[in-house]
Image 1 (cartoon, one colour):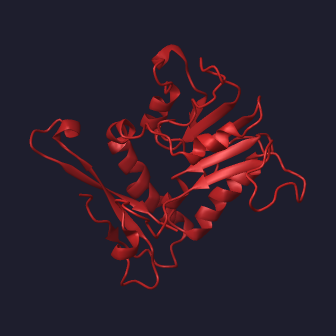
Image 2 (cartoon, rainbow, N blue to C red):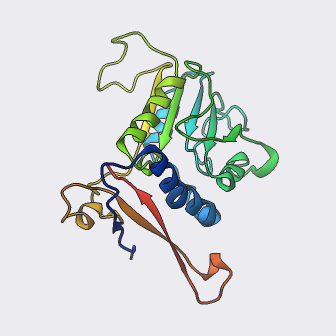
Length: 238
């Protein structure tokens, strides 16, 4: 059974400097510790992401900001040996151990092929403006501790992709060609048999959806017999 998340109240006055320090302590430092265990559990793509990548035109170049261990980078990647290889997805993440995994994340081909990856912040990717055909952000933006910083993360995705003509896509159209991005975040309301029940944890709160989500490392991953470590990651489900 999943351990329950813990509610936290950051308040509405968290300033930029405080937000940066809070994320360093409760996101970046935590992922640096749990990276190896976390990466070992992240290998199965969520279905809609491959569907989106399959819709891209041959020769498209894009980016995954917050790519983690790079489990989406190899899909259709022209850097690898796949028969449908026809796009390139650049990867970036703040966690260096995860980026090290992402660099060689070609299932069944190991270190024979390498990805184009870099350690970078999703708020400031250092990629050129309007240079990419697409961008994705999967389970990343909910780690930013203020709504302003979450909006900046979305703006960074918009900044790096090529603009499209007004009215080119309808609201219900996945579209084709360049100028598109895809975002996935944790939802406040968890459907079905999901392990996380944020809405029940936060049922008594009217003002905050901020939680610390536990990550449990057993003795298999801590090198200490019959022990386990629990690391709390901050998350802000929408």
